[in-house]
Length: 246
Image 1 (cartoon, one colour):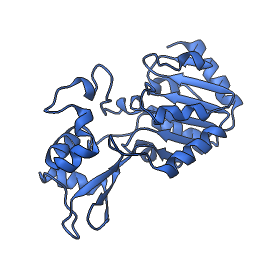
Image 2 (tube, rainbow, N blue to C red):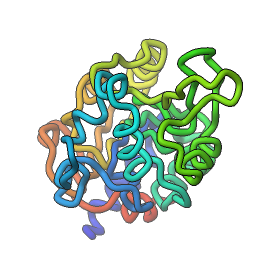
Image 3 (cartoon, one colour):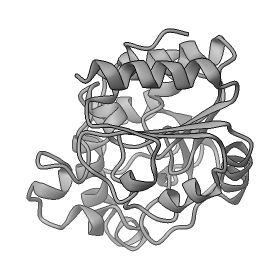
Image 4 (spheres, rainbow, N blue to C red):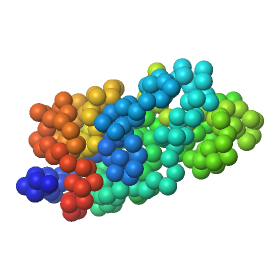
């Protein structure tokens, strides 16, 4: 790890008063959750259908059993815990340094680590609702249905099909979450982008709203935005953030 870059990052954090963190799948891979686009990610594994197809609104409507077979196997994973990145971000928020976490992840690990202001662009596996009566169910209910071998989780009130409160392909992002994310980015004096390839739109385009002093990119591989950053660190996000003191 480049100790000089860590020192630069520390100095930037020290000088900043309103930091926003924008994160992607790479934040959670250190907790054991597979990402989608790396060499070992879901997009490079083989299933009966491409992941992009399975995780689409149309596929969910037409083939719920196959959707849930993939979803339960690769996304609804039990026993996952926050890693060093999640914990450091929660610590930064508690210290009054971090204003918000904007995440493309749906695993709820930021909240589990203690973060309070988490803007989930793509929803959460911890929230699920009945398509018939609208009743909400938590992640534990879904895990129980999975353990019981239920092909399509059912509502315990009306028997309707349950859908995860996640944004599938072909579905739009929540406008309230979008507007709140834009507000946080516009008012940040430092933006740390971590664990994302910045290729998923419209989420990736949100960073254009940042007009603050320091833009930092922390990702294992290069991104199209590297040339615009004040600091680029190509290491694991958890290893980097764990070196920072607040």
